[in-house]
Amino acid sequence: MEWALAILALALLAVATISRRLSGTPVTPAMLFVAIGLLAGPKVLDGIDLQSFSGAVRSLAEATLALVLFSDASRIDLGQLRREVGLPLRLLGIGLPLTIALGAVAGAVIFDQLSLEEALILAVVLAPTDAALGQAVVTQLRIPARIRQGLNVESGLNDGICVPLLFAAVAVADVQSEISEGRSAGTLLLEEIGYGVVGGVTGGLLVAAIVIYAGRAELIDGAWRQVIPAAGAALAYGTASALGGSGFIAAFVAGMTFRLALRRDPGQINELSEQVGNVLNGITFVLFGAILLGPALGELTWALALYAALSLTLVRMLPVAIAMLGSRARLPTLGFMGWFGPRGLASIVFAVIVVEESNLPHEHVIVLAIYVTVGLSVLAHGLTAAPLADRYAGWYEQHPRDKAPPMESAPTDDTRVRGPAAPAAKVAV
Image (cartoon, rainbow, N blue to C red):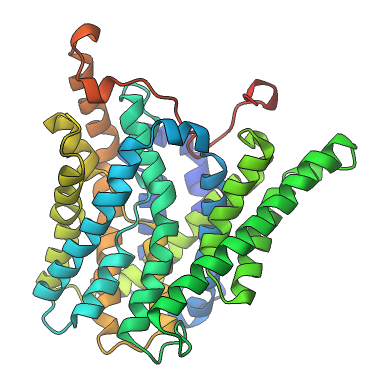
């Protein structure tokens, strides 16, 4: 514990120092954070140990995910999304359920000790994607906007969709879990969503009202303005959790409500939340490498490696290909979209929830598979994001504008990805 805080601080300083050089390279901040965690963990330097941080990992990861969900949701223009709903709807309405189903089948076959319910939990935990792990894909302007937009919106929405599915799956598999608290899966699903929406709408409307009305009256000091969205995310999360709902759904709904009430991208108002989220995300990946992935690699088996590889390839790519049937998307587009479904923060949070709030017979196998898959995703998607984005962009640019593939070349506006917003004066209202 004595060196843990210093190691975390050094990890942040190291990545910050070379952050500009990392842009566009096969080395991502997440890769460095996980690598530092592996080196600092009990298997190597023993600077960060499980006993000291076992309770902190969940709190930190949940706070990070709540901020990320709020920020992601507040960037989504629902009017624009309705106009371009086709691609995200295919990925979320067809691709996501098929990914869960295929992941459950793969889990049940590869790990014969898992029940079908446990395999379903494993599949749900690994279904959400994390676009931040392949940032070059959604920020490379040479890639067709429709493809970038589809992957970005998919990543922003599927975390919240999977939260109630996970809780319902755990309730079915383990009626004694702290998640279920004696409730049926159906009741749990309704309460998680219902109270989550209540908490989210409450938090989102309140912070929007403060920004609008207190801002007009010039009651808000500039130094405190950016604190408001972060407090709103915490308010939504805390309200929903106290009522018995999902704090993650609440954080996401709060962000959407905040954006709707403001009638514009919050932009610079959200900058503190986004930057704090980035810092917490980095710390989470350091602890993930030290406390979760390091010990898991010590128990690595061919079955775990096979499931991780399938989860990132066939289990993701085949559902995406099926979801895109009839869209006239070309084969390179199908391969590109299918490959870039990184697993990251949400899967880590869900895994920790499963460990702490359930008593599944084969819980250890489930979390090992999750940790190995996320670790492989950080490495594989990080290494391939920039080069494959360039390669796909080159393929697209080979087509003359009058002969460009129709699905890929359809015009669309971009939802802003994580990062600095445009100055407030330039943000469309």
